[in-house]
Structure formats: structure tokens, C-alpha cells
Length: 281
Image 1 (cartoon, one colour):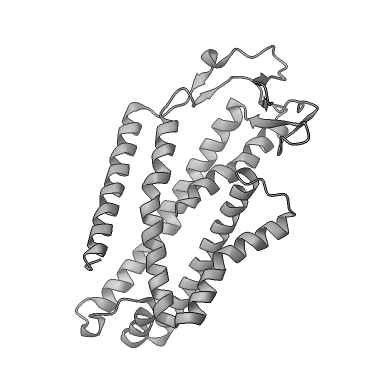
Image 2 (image 1 turned 90 degrees about the horizontal axis):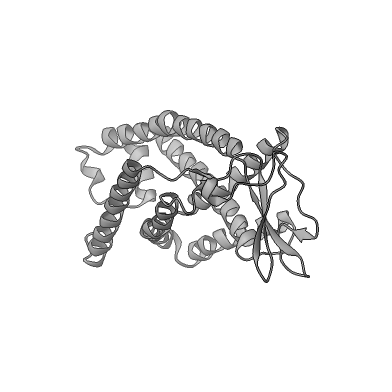
């Protein structure tokens, strides 16, 4: 899901700030400013984490991601492939079965009714998980880009309603066939959007111009209408400037690997769209 990239970037920010606060690396926020808005004559403030907080959160995130990918996700996806292979291979009833409702019936008949129930439960839980990710990502977009001014519970209600309303309308209007078509179309759209979302991510993380971290304490970047200034509340003297910072851009081999993966995803998406256009997807 492309919006998971926004979610990952968003949920790590409180972790960074919490680390700086607990270790005494967070300076006093500049007075006469507002961290969330630049209206009413208030300047907009961006929190810039310390190098120590970034290193700590990177280690934490790498371990967290590794455990989730190579333990839970690996075994769950392996189980899905094994069950699918055992139930669908050389099964004449599996020919032509394309939607999730038919797969549920097939699993119930070929394995046991419990298998169909587990499949339905897995779909429900995965839908809830995806809905939570979508809702939180929508909140972050509304807070940052749209700058919605509403209470958190109301913002969650609005973003969640926007995400589930189309499904309710489709289910009521066209039933199972419409839901299956909508599900397939949503997956195609999400897959097609992925290269456009990941390309800027790869570009920015490979440029030293953007991946510069100043040593020492955290800082606040203050924006006003006339100019931008970097306010440094540091106990060990003034900041050393961007040129004296620590470069944390991706290495050349990682940039090449990311480019190759991006190219493979883009080619596969083009092929998928072509096959769908030819009626063979």
C-alpha cells in the first residue's frame, strides 16, 4: 500500500521527539511560533531531531521491520501459498474460480468448512488492518497538507467514513460482483501508484543535499513569510552549518539496488495494465 510509506514516516516522528526529550536533547521551542500553523502572524516551526535520535530510531525500525517481515509475514504468506497449492492444484473445480467468494466456497468444499471460515476471518482481519493504516495515513495527510482543524476523534471518523463509504454504496448497488470488481480495481490502482510514490523517496534519500544531519542537540526550523531561519538552541555552542553536518544519504550500491527494484515494479505494472487492456489480466 503506497500510503504505508506516509504512515511509516509519520509514526516515527513522535518516537524521535520522545527520545530527544528523555535524553535532554530537546531545546526550548522558540516563542511566538506555532508548530502546526502559520496563521494569525504565527511562524511555522519544524522539529529537527538529533543525530542520536535518528540512529536510535533507525536501529529500532530495522529490527522491527526485520522481525515483522521474516517471522510473521514470512510464515503467514508461506501458509497461504501452501494451502492454496494443496487445495487448487489439479483440482478441476478450481478452473474459472476468480473472486474471493468462489475461493471461499472452493476451500470449504475441497478442505473443510473450517478452512473457509478461517479464510473469511483472515480477510476480515486484513481488511481491518488495512483500514487502520489507511485511516491513520489519512489523518497525517489532513493534518499536514490540508491542515484540518478538528478534534482527533472527528478527524478519524471523517477519514474512516471516506474510506468505507464507497464499499457500502457498491455492495448495496451491485452486490458481490461489484465488490469483487472494486477490490480488483483498487489493487490495480494501488499497484500502479506505487512507482510514482517510491520514485521521490528514492531520489531524496540518495541526495546528500537533503540527507544532512547536524551533530549535537535537536533544533527547530522556523519559517516566516519573509525568510527561513534555522534556530538552534544548543548547549554546546552554535550549529556548524549544513556543510559541517553528517551525510546520511544512501550509499551508491543501495541506490542502484533501489533503482533496479523500482524498475522491476514499474515494468510489471506496465505489463499488468497492458494485459488488463487486452482482457488477459
